[in-house]
Length: 235
Image 1 (cartoon, one colour):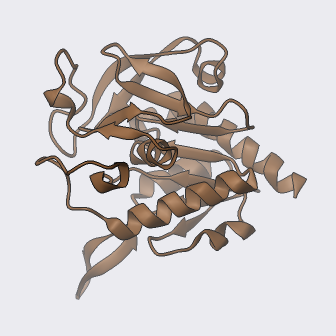
Image 2 (cartoon, helix red, strand yellow):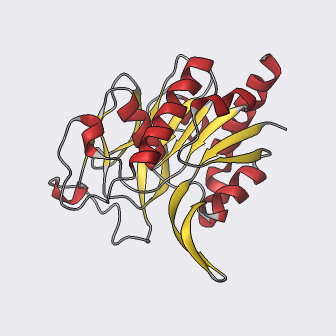
């Protein structure tokens, strides 16, 4: 069974008598990767890229906005307080995974990390962009919309030419750097980036971990886990 490294949050949390910063991840992610046949190891902010040497794949979870200084901009007034340790950790993990040829799956923020790591940039507040559809009504909620996928892409192999996806974000990829944009929403918002030159390196803007998406998006995660199994057997 392949072992997936999954990036995690570092946020204030409360349990029992304790209220402390904690490394955590929504259980939805654990359920998702378990259903796809993987064992999961959490990689909290602060873990160096050497942690990947014993793993078979890297998944990067959703979360707070990336610090805009990472792509040479001042932060928009709507941006989250920067999580600088998480930004540094995930970008370092991602770049090392690419050096190793390790399969990568980016989810929401994870897609944006991929773009920034490749020299790209982000739209800091989608509601400021004219004619943009609603991608999040308010924090903590999801909306659904269609996305279309480029013929011959990895994501099109999984979903076909079009799918309904879920959405909960106010930022999006502007420039993907040297990644390939292979999926967009009807308003042109980037929904998928990938590197077609490797076995599996895909980032999606939506949330396959949501329980309502488990049937529709399980094939995506199974494809990632299968690539991780191939990577494991090749080492």
